[in-house]
Structures are given as structure tokens and as C-alpha cells.
Length: 71
Image (cartoon, rainbow, N blue to C red; front, side, top):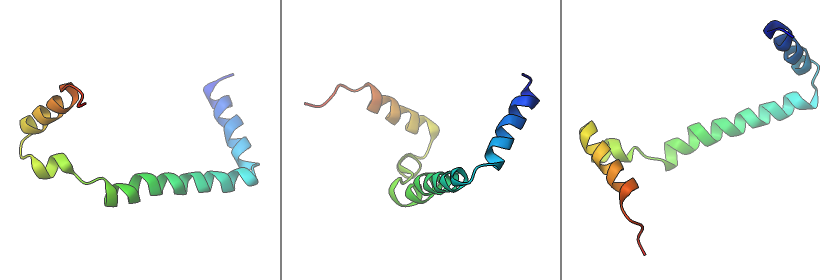
């Protein structure tokens, strides 16, 4: 089976879906909410606001991932 044949197979499968289209829309909306909306409100740019150069950012990250675990 060629790449074009596989593409047509999946394209025809998605066209004939009824419930699947609705489920894919829900999945895409949830992904948008998780990656776009939540990032804006909960995941601030910590490295960008607290460090001015790439070297400082790299040093901080290296320190955080190589330090011993706290007890």
C-alpha cells in the first residue's frame, strides 16, 4: 500500500464518521484549553522574568536538575 493509498484510507474513514467527528472536536477543544488557556494563567515565564541572559537561565536549570534531593 502506498502513502497516497494510506492517506485516502484515513481520509475516507474520517469523512464517514458521525460520532467520531464530534469526539475529535471535543479532543481538539480540550487540547486548546490545556495548552493555550492554562499556560496563560498558570505557567508564568519564570526564567524570562527572573534571569536576564541565557547563561544565567542555563546555570539555574543545571543547578535545579543536578542538586541532591531535599529530605
